[in-house]
Image 1 (cartoon, rainbow, N blue to C red):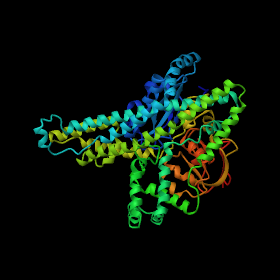
Image 2 (cartoon, rainbow, N blue to C red):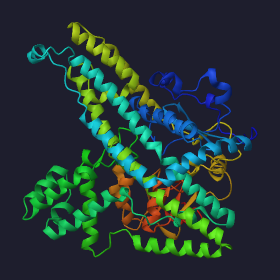
Image 3 (cartoon, one colour):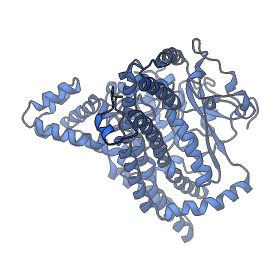
Length: 609
C-alpha cells in the first residue's frame, strides 16, 4: 500500500447520515466493518460498486453481492486458482456496497498458482464450445426450475383430498421447502454466472499482454477493437424492437405507436386498425423471451424488466419507427466494425518479426474472439432472463405474507434479509398453524423503521473510494469491468484539484472526437428525454439502453472499464465513448456543450458558465 498521504477516508471514520445512525440493523453482522477485523479492513482499498448497486441496498437484495462475495472468490481461488488474484471483498457502508480487490504479488506464489491454473483454464479453452453449450442448457434449466416454484396463499383448511391420500406434509412444509429451493436456485445461477466469466476476461487479458509486450505503446482501446464486431445475444432484444418497428410501418399501425400513451391504450389502438391484430400477435410472441430484459444491471429488484412495464419497449419501438420514417438507418454497423477490426489486426500482425510471434498472435486473438461473446452473453441468461423473473417470484412470496396481514404490502419483503425472511416465515406459519396470534406486529414495526432509515441513507453521497490508495491496481475484474486502475485512483485522489476544472479524464473506450450538447441521465426512466445528436452522460449504461445509441453522438459514464457495457456497445455502434470518468454526472449539466475524445479518454466542457 501507499503512504498515508495517498489515502481516502478511513472507512471507520465515515459518519452515519443524520437519522440513520442505526443503519447497521438492516444488514448481517458480517457485511459491515467491525472492530474485530479493523486491523486488516482499514488497510484495504475499497471502491463503491455503483455499476451493480447504485442505490441504498434493500436487505433482501444483499443476496446478490453476498453471492458474488463467495462464488466469484471461490472460482478465483479454489476452482481455477487464478495466479495473480484473490477476488473481491465486500462491505456495506451507510447502505452502499463497497468492494476491495485482493491480489497476489509474491512471484513464487504466482508461479505456484500458475501451475494449477494452466491445466484448468486450458481444459476450458480447449473444450470451450462444448462447455459453453452445456452452460447454456444449465442456465436455462436453472431459470425453468425457479419459474416452476410456487408460493401459494396459505389455506384456511387443507384439502380433504390430502387427508384421503395420507399426505403428511401440508402448506407450511411446502412454503418452507420452496423458499429453500429458491435460495438454492439463486446460488446455482450465481455459480453459473462466474463459471466461465473469469476465463473470458482472462483470454482477453493474455492477448492484451502479448500485444503490449510487442507494442508497448498500443492502447487498451486498440486491443478491444481487434476483438469487436462479434454478434452477441445482448443485442437480440434491441434487434427485435427494430424488426417490430419495421413491421409496424409495413402493417400501417405506426401512427398508433408513435402517438404514445400507456401500454394498454397503445396496444388497444393498434388492435383497432387493419393489420393491428397481426402486429400485436407478433409483439406478444417476441415478449418471450426477449422482453425479459432488465432496464438496469439486473442485480437489484428496483430495475424492472421490459415485460414489467411494456411502455418501455413500446416507446423504444416508437423511436425506431420515427427513424425509419425519416429514412435513417437503425441497424448496427456490424460490417463496418468488422472491417476496421480486421484492418487493425492485420496491421499489427504484419509488424511482428517472426513466424512464431505471428502464430502466437493468431492463436491468442482467435481465443479472445471465441470467448469474448460469453463476457456479454452470460448477462443475458443470468441478470436478464433469470433475475428479472426472480424478483417477481420473490414478490409472489411477499404476497403470501401480505395476504394474511402479516406484512402491510407484498413489497415489504424487500426490507428483510433473506435469512430474516426464514424467521418471519416461521413466525407466520406458527400463528397460522396454531390459529393464534403471531408476531407480525414486530416485523411491521421493524420494516417501518427500516423505511425511515433508508430514506435518510438516500440523502448521503457515497465517496468513490475509502481506505489507503494502492500503488497499483492489477485485479482483472476491477480493471476491465469497473475501470478502476492506477489512473482512476489518481483521478479520485485529485478530484477538484488542478487547473483543468472543465476537463474530465476517463478510460478511452471507443475512438472518435465529437462535440454536442450534453444530456445527463441518472436512470432508465429518463431515457425518453434524450434527443438526437446529444452526448449521453450517465452513471452507467445497461444493455436495455441499446436503442438510445442510435440517437446519441457519444457516451460518457462515471463508472466502467474497457469491457463495461457502455464501452462495448459504443464500439459496436462506432460512437466515441469515455467511461470511468468518476464525476461526469456531477461535473456536467444537461445542455452544456462538451467535446468527447474517445481516443484519448478526455471530456471537455466547452461552455462551463
